[in-house]
Amino acid sequence: MNEKQIIKALSKVDDPDLKKDLVSLNMIKNISINNNVVSFEIVLTTPACPLKEKIKNDCLNELNKINNNVKYNITFSSNVVPFDKKTMIKNIKNIIAISSGKGGVGKSTIASNLAVGLGNMGAKTGLIDADIFGPSIPTMFNCENEQPTIKKSKEKNIIIPIEQYGIKLLSMGLLIPNNKAVVWRGPMASSAMKQLILDVEWGELDYLIVDLPPGTSDIHITLSQSFPVTGTVIISTPQKVSTNDAEKAISMYNQEQTNIPIIGLIENMSYFIDDNNKKNYLFGKDGGKTLCNKFSIDFIGQIPIDKRISDGSDLGYPIILKENKISDIFKTLSQNIARIIAINNSK
Image (cartoon, rainbow, N blue to C red; front, side, top):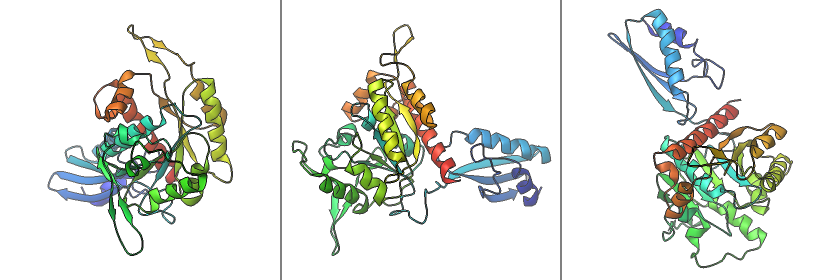
C-alpha cells in the first residue's frame, strides 16, 4: 500500500458539511506508512466538529476496500477557518455577537456557557462583556473582585484579560468598582467598545464572543462598522413580547449600516419539565422556530427552564462545566454554532 493509493481512497470521502472531498479541501496531513500501520491526520475546520466519528468511519470504509489487513491510525487536529483573513483584527479569526431584542432573556448566561463550551472543545476562546452599563459576566465567572493587569508602553496602555475556566475575559465590571454606576453618553460607550477589542492583548483566538447589551444601540452599530464580525446569534424566549423585539434585532442586522450575518437563533426558557417528565410551555410554544421560518434563518436550538442554569450563573460556575442533560444541551449548541460558522466561512 502506498501514499498514492491512500490519497485516492480518501478523495472519495466528503466532509458532510462542506460537501467536498477531504483531499481537495486539504484536510489530510502527515501520511506515514510503517510496516503494517498507516497513519494520517485529518485537519478539521473547527475542534467543535460533531461529525468526527462519521468522517473517521467513512475514511476507514474507503481504505478497507483497498486493504483490510492494515491497521489505520487516524488522528484529528483543527484549523478554524477565519471569517475574513484580510480584515482579521489582532489574530482573532471569528467575532461572534450575542444579541437580544430585549433584556431578561438569558443572553449573558448563554454567552458564558457557549464560550466555555467552545473552549472545552479545544478552541481558543475569548469573551467580552460589552454590556457597558449592566455587566454580569464577572459574576457568572466568579471573578468580581479580580482586575486585569495593564501593560504600559510609550504609545498606549494595553489590557491583559483575566482567564477563568480556560476563557480570556474582559468586562467593564472588571475595570470599574461593582458599586459604581457607569453614567456615559453614547459616544463614550462606543469608544469603550472599541477599546475592549483593540487595546487588549487577546493573543490568537479562534472565537471572540461579544455579549452585547439588549436592544439596538450605539454599541451594536460601533461593533458592526468597526470590526469584521463573523455573525450574530439572536437570543429570544418563545413569548410574543420577546419574539417581537427579536424581530427588530434581526431587522437591524439586515440593514445596510450594520449588515452582520445572522448565524441563527437560540430559544431560551422554551419549556419546563415537570416531575412527570412532561414538557410545560409556560411562555408559549415554538415562537423562536416561527421567527426563524419567517426570516429563513437557522434555528440553533432550545434551552429549557431549569433552576440549575441560574444557580450556576449566580455561583460563578457555568452549568456547562457540569455533567448533566442541561450541560449536554449547551455543548450541542456550541457545536452547532461552530459548525454553521465553518460552513459559512468556507463558502
